[in-house]
Image 1 (cartoon, rainbow, N blue to C red):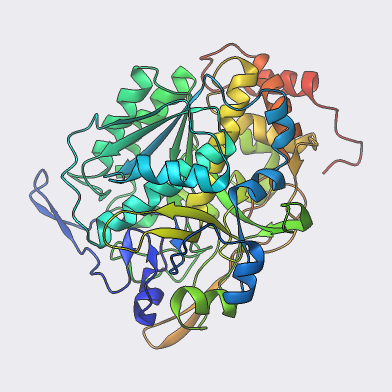
Image 2 (cartoon, helix red, strand yellow):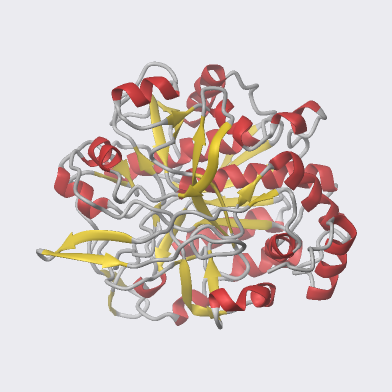
Length: 500
């Protein structure tokens, strides 16, 4: 994720965005194909990894006492999203496969997932398969980049599994870090096209992104969409994290923030579901003591102090905003008053606040083995991948692009959607000796650019979404507005006359 500049200055031992504090940030890369210098697009995992390793999963009370922030176990998060009623009826993701795509992967992925499962009282997944279809990954060597992606990989696997404990997991490792140009994204596309064309799973989780404006030419993004077009045609759901810098984000050097609202890709792609992060407010058993709010720890001094060692304001919030590349897709026509003529993100949110971090386990070289509270849209994205896998099982086929369903569900005020109406993604930071504030977007009734359509009550959301999907054949591609409306009418109560 993209708070590397502020954290590096603070000098703490935070792992984030594929970078460990103090690590050098990549500068311009040379494109051999073009024969000229081209700015590298910094695409990083959208996670924040809190710095203290613990020997067991910490409780909320422990984190509040010692760190002045909340943290939650996998079981608490399951309860918060009301998943146990689904599990009791056999809806666990059985027979489905969640595809996790990460650069390099983690050398200890199998072991770490096993320890996580034991500590979280979860069953092992039926199968964990690891493949490298875009080329062999070099042997692991502890450095900031490899450690960052290893932590990302562990988080993705653990929280996809926590949401859908009966689903198979397919880890797709790519051999380079994602820098646009001759390396990075082309390998991701190749790997994703392989798993799509070989029908290896129904949902792809991507916990990485790059600021749209960090591409040398915005048209370059359009050449990198092959896998997403393929997925839409073949009924595979693709998810991507919306970023962790709120309405701001960094330029290609990974250090300098834009001074105006920006957003990132691939979450901004109309064929991808952009996943934002919410802050949950839970008791020890995982029940909500307050309704979820937009994740924004940018001004939370205890959280910032714990992460960076400084209470200085720094971007630490759910990404969201308007694309400068993509126009408004048809499924967002009903929220044109919010997005105007542009594609708006995120589409939906899951848990991701740092004040409310998720307990994860890791043991790869370079950092102490143990449990870490971890946060960011990198947590939220695999969580929603688990929700999709549960729905695939109930629907009897993969869902494909879910965005049209989500907006229809919001319009009809589906009981399974939990509207987020409080919070914003405005952030402040000090840059070049001056303080800057990038004013973001506020949550409100219905769709907004801070939380999307809200978050989920899975016991209701999964059957509602599955019902809508059953009204369209498997592998249908992007459903039409008419077909979506018919599915909504069949599965959801009509909105009241006073509907927004």
